[in-house]
Length: 232
Image 1: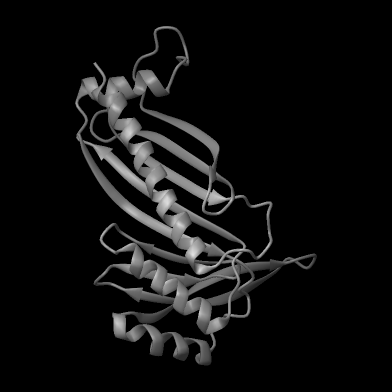
Image 2: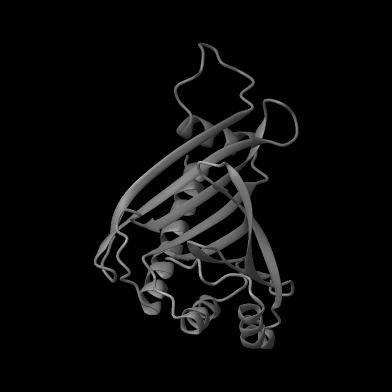
């Protein structure tokens, strides 16, 4: 059994339409982040205007650091910082803080999405996960199971924020070698503050507290998965 982190995406949410891909904004971002090895880039979004069904292209600013690696993307409704596990949380907070101050942004929601692969499972280990996560069978005497998914969302209170958050995890069994032999699973966690509360109430230190708690929750989820695999 081996655990490999694919990506970690930290996000803040708000009304960021005005931070578009203008030369002025790109120049500001480059001057602020060039010292850390980031280079300017852009992403293209498609927007459909109703009722004419007119398709418009929106260009949004992005910063890319291929050495870290790390990508910062400013979208109309959120800012994403996507990276691996080698970038320290202090750096993530610094990146967000710079952008918040640069454009005077407000935050109404926070999220962390993380994807981890558990691979090199033995037949016995894979069977333990399947038996725990997938009942009941699709038909009596089922065999040649080639894929399964288990989805779960719970709410917990984060004392530092004084409110509930969503803790979601999705587990997908993947057949990589022979059909019917699932020998790895992907664990995707989606941890976020409640979307129905749109008040701009979070500061940068709230983001730090949330990210720390979310990463702990993700670790607990992975430890629970390992516990199933190692159970006698």
